[in-house]
Length: 218
Image 1 (cartoon, rainbow, N blue to C red):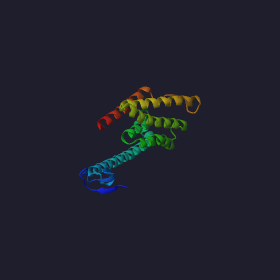
Image 2: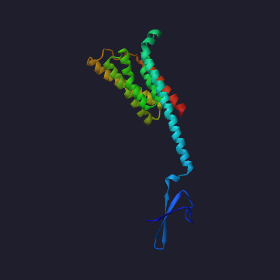
Image 3: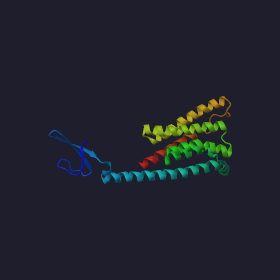
Image 4: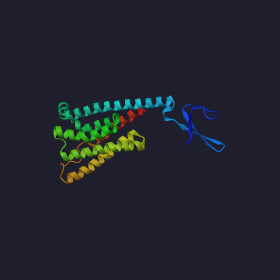
């Protein structure tokens, strides 16, 4: 077992290292071993700064999630009343997808999945709309939308294209499944209830907002 000595010698002068001296015949071999607890202060300071920054981001994401979730619940709850008051069918602007997009942009992945899973269920619970099978379709579509956005964003490095593609692909899957449900008489007739031109406009608005937000953030 070599002797461990702390301090300086003519071969090495770092005070934050131990050196172990081992004698073999007439030759002395020095083995230097770093001591974790004696890392330079700069490393500790950097670690503390990173930890504080991560905690700050987590608090901000949590605050955003609470605000977005509360707004989503209120919007879904009051959509029938607002539709009657404004004399405008608010479902045309896709309020669930609107809140989902805001969640993906301003909160985090977990909260986006949470909203995708619970908003259709909440809408069904408070207004019995959409009907049960359509609610399942919408839930699957929104969950697919979230997964697609984060997957495509990592691969494309283009937020507008990622958001637009995620919405279009998830909508296509929704209409495909809805056609099957209609043929099985699980939902009523009428494949497309919102005009396509309105869907194109809302998709462009959602994707453009996502692009501008992440561009300014960068």
